[in-house]
Amino acid sequence: LFAGPVDFVKGVVAMSGLPPADRVEICFAGRSNVGKSSLINALTGRKNLARASNTPGRTQEINFFALGDSRYLVDLPGYGFAEAPVAVVAKWQALLKSYLAGRQTLRRAFVLIDTRHGIKKVDDEILTLLDKSAVTFQVVLTKADKVNRATREATIEQVKAALARHPAAYPEIVVTSSEKGEGLETLRALIAGLE
Ligand code: GTP
Ligand code: MG
Image (cartoon, rainbow, N blue to C red; front, top):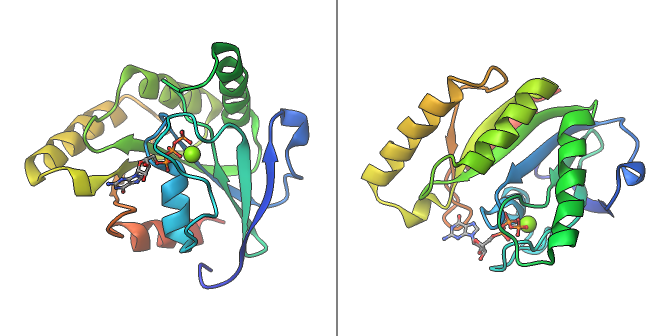
């Protein structure tokens, strides 16, 4: 699946702009700057497919990437702190929540959590929204290259404890580094297995 074509389809700023709901969708959600766009690039092996940057709030639209002809990978705007005007941020946060709560073909949400920080209150709010919407989600720890063994284990324990309170959680936690390539094969296999 990942050896084949992957193409940018469109960037969406309103629910009315969503592409037809005719494929399996897998989205990447998470706080601003957690590494969503970088992970999509690493998974697909395209350096600049999704635009990544050091400025929180880089992705301001819902970006759809076609993976083969049966799946969309969906890069979402981040939540939490963003370096953009308040009114603008409010607009894209509302869009993000409408998408997560109301997209029929959304098969799985990967919720990215920085391995250095673990699950914060803003993350937990998103997880609760996914519970209510019955969207199965899975936690992907990012930037694992930045932490030592002890921090990594501590974060995994913190996440496990938090997931026990979320009925929509898929229990397997995937630890990744877009920089070093860790966890990418595991994620690719998960994505390929979603029908
Ligand atoms: P928004 O679109 O602003 O919500 O951010 P995002 O979640 O898409 O994050 P993005 O992929 O733009 O990455 C943010 C910063 O983290 C960039 O400077 C990346 O280079 C860096 N980064 C992402 N993944 C990794 C990783 O695995 N390891 C390291 N060391 N840095 C990473
Ligand atoms: Mg981004």
